[in-house]
Amino acid sequence: MTDQSFDKIDFTKNPLKKDDYEDCLFTNCDFSGSDLSNIQFVDCMFIDCNLSLAKLNQTVFRNIQFKGCKMLGLFFDHCKEFAMSFDFENCLLDQTSFYQRKIKKTKFINTQLHEADFTECDLTEAVFDRCDLTRAIFENTIIEKADFRTSFNYSINPETNKIKKAKFALSQVAGLLEKYDIRIDNSY
Image 1 (cartoon, rainbow, N blue to C red):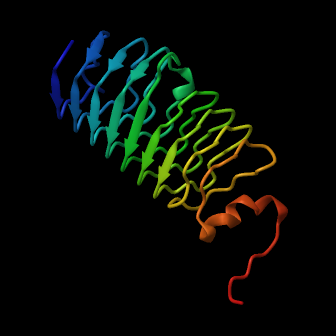
Image 2 (image 1 turned 45 degrees about the vertical axis):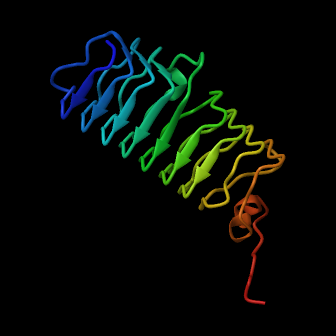
């Protein structure tokens, strides 16, 4: 399907047809718990949709925009990795896994990523703009040239991640030192 708009459709009751979707717009749709396996999305936009707990086995996401979406507990590591690309703005991505995904230059804007798993992920030049990364997991992750300057609540171990030329705000640099269990006092 090409150039289609889907508005306020409950795909939990009427499942999305297994097809290729190109240049499609999904607005206020409910995909929660839906099986989106083996569906290809290319140049699509999802606005104010609920994709929480959707199954993504071999799903293709290529050049996708997610805006205002609720996306809890997704496993992007089950998607087809070839040419995977997407950006997130004003989304909830709690407990979502990007394990071993190569998602260079991805933009996460004003997005909540509590307990998101970025283990062994390549986030080179990714942008985390005003993101809450409470308990997000960065382990053997490439975050070289990534921008965390406006994000907060992250804990990133420089010894187990590649962070060369990544950008951090001085006010949040404690998130890089957490493993040392030291106290930083800025009252002096």
